[in-house]
Image (cartoon, rainbow, N blue to C red; front, top):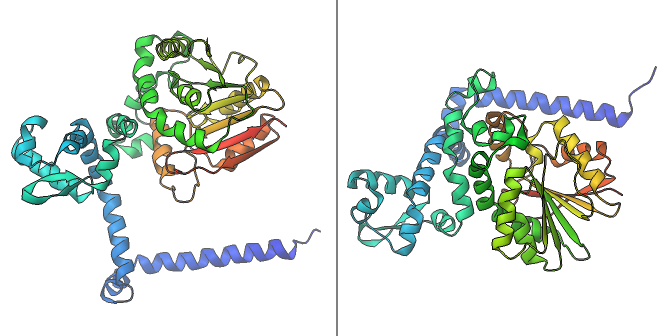
Length: 383
């Protein structure tokens, strides 16, 4: 008979005690009398009000998102960046009635997207001003209507009772087993979105990892080459390679030619789940790729990358990850986005590390980066 160690016994007892405390807390918070008391008590009133505001934000969050989407779709931030306007002055340019414009302006001001100025005018709020100079973020926002459509009945989505939705059709490789056969027309919408939004992610990854001493970077699933273009500007000595589906790779080839990078960049078309990757890169990047796949598919991809890397190479996984303190709502967003997409899941860094170990990587480390709400950067080493 094996007795539990004192440390493990204590850990179990502490966990049970914490669970018991939380159960009591839950019953207390669910009690209407306690809710009324907490609002009436000056000591607890700030906490109760803060919780009430959080509940309001959860309940009204979809409406907030639709207001943001309307502002982005109407190009309102660029309009008000030029000069503040009254709703009457802006109505004709937005092709809205004055009443509808006033309603939108009031709603956006309540969300810090706009703010009131003198003479009945509205200018940009702090959030709106940040978005006005961020076309990458606006590109992501304006494609969200597809996700909103898929989330009309989230319970049916969870139960698998909904047909293939708008998000899955937008990312055709997620529902098409013949990925190599996708045409330019089929890959163009999502490729353009990835290219437009990539600068946000690229600046985080390129600030977190130094390419000093590295010779060749290959971006697998690299889309139209936006990440490699950013890396080329950051590290002029770096040779570049891109691997993606044939129709997407051809779009990257055209981009490199237009940007004068054709001599530095080789482009390879194929399926990274079925075809061996080209050799010769000492850095390989997977930018917003791994969370698009289930564990077995992700493991196959990571194994393919491992076989293409030299012993002194490095793999960079750049994507939003679960469990990042300060960016916890990413679990909600990407959990349901990938559910609507029909494949993939957000993962914690340690879950990705476990997949990397199974794929033959000796070690991995999460690199510090500034904007954790946007992405995380994980480096993995074969030896």
